[in-house]
Amino acid sequence: MIPEKIKQYFDKKSHVKISRTIDKTSRGYILGYSTDFILVQETDDFTVVGYIILPVNQIKNISCGKNEQYYTKVMIWEGEADKIGINHKIQLDSWEAIFSSIKKTNLNIIVECEDADIDTFTIGPILKITKKKVHIEHFDASGFIDEDPVKIDFQDITRVNFDDRYINVLSKYLRKRKSKTK
Image (cartoon, rainbow, N blue to C red; front, top):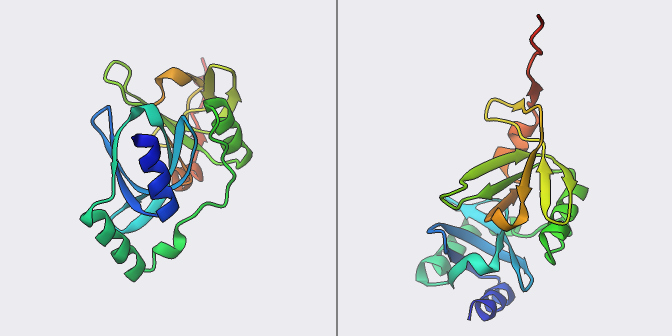
């Protein structure tokens, strides 16, 4: 049922509401999909925000009701509908392919593991990709880069964001902590 809805809303270029198994909701336009992943241009407050990739197996429902249809009209009236699309080629075959594609863009990303037992938010550039993990050079909300990369198991990932305003702006102002001298 979900794969058919993904294809239907992708073909129609519909604004959709995506209900996820972790009790979270995302909204936007489906720009690509595979058997295992969906690429969405996320929207908020009648503007395009950035891109997210979600595992299909964590999608509970996708809908395009009257609210989503009206949202599309407002996006057109506000001139935001012209911004829908992507200039990057993102392979959606596997996490390895996804991270390799994003790494080629030189964009920083956010990787979320939203399960209550893990609940992590990692932001930064992709340093390394293995068959089971991605290594991110994490920075905090003050722009400080961690000394050691964060290694994230693919199986724990629930959401990846890239090319959004928060990531792109903060990425311009990164810094390293001054080393403590003895």
